[in-house]
Length: 113
Image 1 (spheres, rainbow, N blue to C red):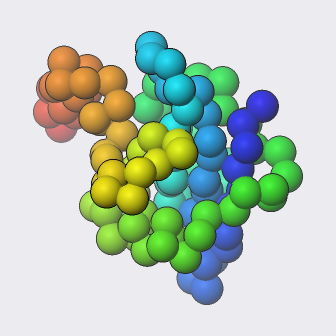
Image 2 (tube, one colour; image 1 turned 60 degrees about the horizontal axis):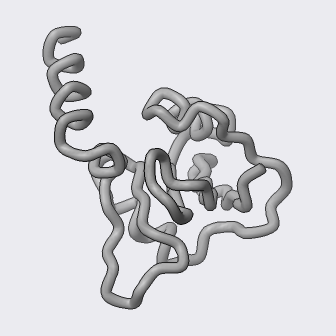
């Protein structure tokens, strides 16, 4: 089970923060996603390749800095190592799997259009 939580914004949307095991590497990551509701946020993460993602409770909601970071990112889904270093920046979800996976995902979107 992932540590995490959510915050409902004034416009009705939510920001969900989860701490998960890093796929295909040791360690943990902190993932942020912005969506219309909690169910859609978790579905977005599942569609990005994080299959077993569930949110139970609200033990570790996103901080105001995390909310600002995800709202100002065009994709609305970010991650970084946890515990993070002060100089580490948020990265887009496509960077989690490396350039080959990101390129394949972009090509799939282009073909679908």
